[in-house]
Length: 489
Image 1 (cartoon, rainbow, N blue to C red):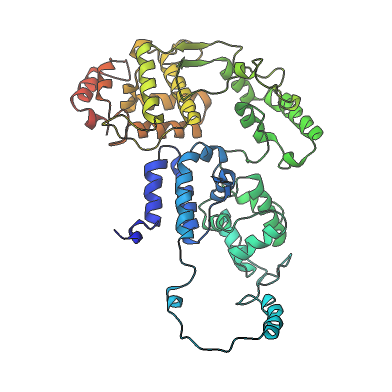
Image 2: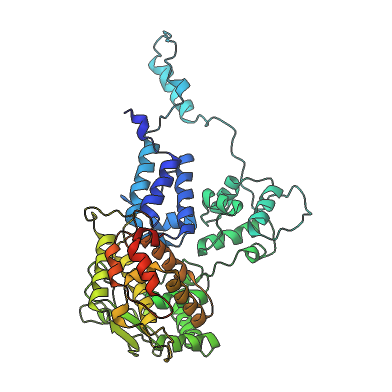
């Protein structure tokens, strides 16, 4: 087979993302990453690296994805970035027409004096093509009256056109002010496939408003609601749950402020907002005291740093700035309804982790994507909370379903009524849905996926099913055992 048969194409990037990354990233983030990788290939742009490893932060910012989401799939993103670099490096430096050997002419060898005279002029020779236009701080608009657009992408495209600029020129002009703005990222904003979500991109948006003499915040007001706090503040030494709560209330220039001011801001947010008395805060505090979960123990490949581990003598203490508030809701203060998983459910969880984390799958099994330790730990927590909700008493504060522990099994996830009850329970408990539910649904669908889903390839799980009032009936069990593959569809 010729070497050209192995040439990297957009179709192969799309296939790689579907096979290797579909189980690791939410669908919208997967689409953004695929578009970014395709742009790199088609526009001859090398993905950013830090040493030999990809720079996941710069890739996330350029693709419009949260860095921690991409970090969980770093090991699977690295090979496709390496393949793009090899494909770009293997491209010929000249066009095919220029490969024809030109007609040879015999010229007299230049003298040493002539060569010396020509060296300065050749070194100062300008690049071919038109000279780039100088960057103006405030370019003059082509017309001064316009009809405002409601959505962000259309409004941004209007003002770029109104000032006679292109996406590339605007990106260079904003970067020249000291705020980096990638041309691909700006192009995605104009097309409407992504929008500013990081602190750096929001600063770039402010610079665009300043450049075009627009009212401050006029473009920001058109941004779609993402349901997420702006990312970019340096809070690496703060536990992740508290970091998510703090991110909503910190100023955009938090990371650029002196340490003393950062300490004052953190203290104020913790005491006034996080530990305050708003309605939602009272609900959140009560919900944290109502702990519910089925606890899986002794699982390899799914170990996370816990508070007790952080407080052990062998661990380094936190900087006082990053210490939790004195009256913060410590998850370990209220035992709540936390029970150990029964032996059979524990074995099922162990088998699932082995299937999703092993370097090679067992003979006869197929899978799509693997879980790294952080992802595996997150899924263990998700399923622990899910089974805990089913096992909790319906008469208690948690208002669970009251399923016997011995009846819990991953085979329950085969039935839509199980998912319907759980999603309604979460919506009634919190009052709205979040990305958490979307991620769990994506995992559930992957377990039932044709040919590569773990539950679909485990018909023996049907032997663990028992009737559960309102969720699983005798007929459901009979149909599933008779045609496991059909019931999984």
